[in-house]
Amino acid sequence: MSSRLLSFVGRTGRRRLMSTAIKLTTVEVNDKTGIATLTMCRPPVNGQNLELLLDIKSSINEIKNNNSRGLIITSASPKVFSAGLDILEMYKPDQQRLRAVWTELQNVWCDLYGISVPTAAAINGHAPAGGCLLATACEYRVMVPNCIIGLNETQLGIIAPKWLVSGYLNILPKRVAERALTQGRLFTTDEALQEGLIDEIANSKEEAVDKCVAFIGTFAKVNPVARALTKQQFRADNLRQFHKEREQDVDDFLSLVNRPEVQKGIGIYLEGLKKKANKQ
Ligand SMILES: CCCCC/C=C\C/C=C\C=C\CC(=O)SCCNC(=O)CCNC(=O)[C@H](O)C(C)(C)COP(=O)(O)OP(=O)(O)OC[C@H]1O[C@@H](n2cnc3c(N)ncnc32)[C@H](O)[C@@H]1OP(=O)(O)O
Image (cartoon, rainbow, N blue to C red; front, top):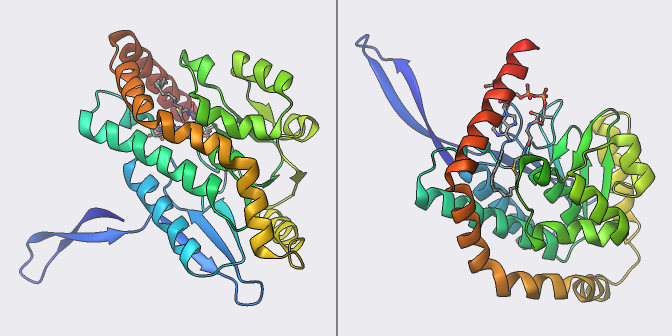
């Protein structure tokens, strides 16, 4: 939960500041299907800052504990599923906060990747980098047309750590994953379908959610314990490896982000994003 300062004029005519708690995710459980939809709501692009990551983590835990039959992750933004890590968190960063951001990204990934109920992503917009990470942590992906998805880290001059790549490797043939990662390729919706990075295309967010519901429905007659243990068997090696390396991974991330040439690169990248947004 993030807290925001709201400014308003009180009866005395003085401007007052009020601190309110604003949740950056919502969880809605459908009474009929028992499926929970986790929606990210951090405009404009669901940039993954510390607060959004904490809220995603707490929503996943809520779903774990409320006996939902499945989890669908989607976005409240009309054009973007998630633009990945909020680049502002990495620019001239406060060190403790930067450490917390990466730790929470790790937490979100392992909670979503490891949850026992069926998971699906209704990708209702662009999903680069950390957006792709969330989608590939799920078991099924449905995406709307004319968007992009992929791990573009090498395009940014950085290496995606192993755990970030492992979702990719669960889905794509090794040959395709290696080429896409070394190129920092962002797939269009059609290309993603062709390569198997997504499972279906839907013409709207609503249709994407419906298709995710239908996927989760395919498990209706499967014993949930047997299903969960089978999923765990497939994912346990990646999770074990991740837990071995997670502390070192945080240190590596911090030292990478703090390098002067990386800081310079992030500054230029941010400028480019802002210029592009102003042109539109
Ligand atoms: C850059 C070097 C990083 C070095 C870090 C070192 C180590 C990290 C190791 C690994 C980390 C990997 C995980 C990551 O997720 S890194 C993040 C990578 N994400 C991206 O490259 C996506 C960038 N965004 C886009 O491509 C487009 O915004 C997008 C296709 C998602 C949407 O396009 P659209 O046209 O709809 O929107 P825009 O006009 O581009 O953006 C609107 C608004 O939002 C701001 N913004 C966009 N993305 C981000 C972001 N990731 N973080 C912060 N802010 C973002 C953009 O600047 C616009 O803002 P404003 O000008 O309106 O204020």
